Length: 238
View 1: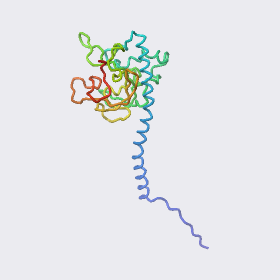
View 2: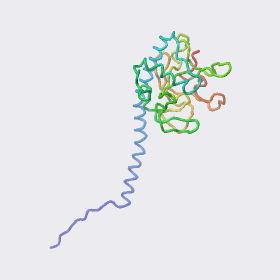
View 3: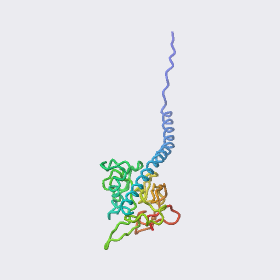
View 4: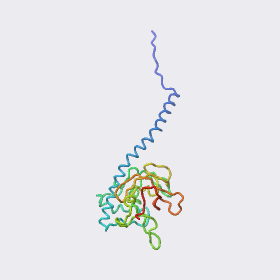
């Protein structure tokens, strides 16, 4: 008696190559979309953090004769040392700084260093940045002899002295100061129209484009100058 046995056929090498190619194409199409969806999902958390921190700064000003925090004369602390003053206003007394999630943007997964370039670490884990993803608009710190403000900013100013509170930056993602973007990352450290989350003196928070002028040699970062007409913010309180 003859028994016919149908042998199961496996994939040929060509078929495997075709399958792998199709999977690669699908992954290439889906991954950017998933990345954009993840970045968009992180924005509300970052926006809420900035609102809470902005409210805390207002409360501090109310208790300090209407004045915003003073900035130290050495970046990055000029922009991040304010966190030490805010902790009691946001219920974080006794919390270790690196565990204060309020000061950690979920999109903060890398930063730019002048010497090391792209660093795949969070700013909110760096002691030199006071464990904060967010920078106070304190660029008007005193420098030089005699000490005087060289750049725009609102540190130490009276809240009532701010001319356009709806446009004046109060608190922002640190990336906006250079600028680059955590939400739409590129391998470039400074570029025009990088989009960042920014909190304003009047209390609202927006995801906006930051101006950067590549032609400038005196003041190479975004916080060094107010943008031209057409942008929705300014660093100066005048």
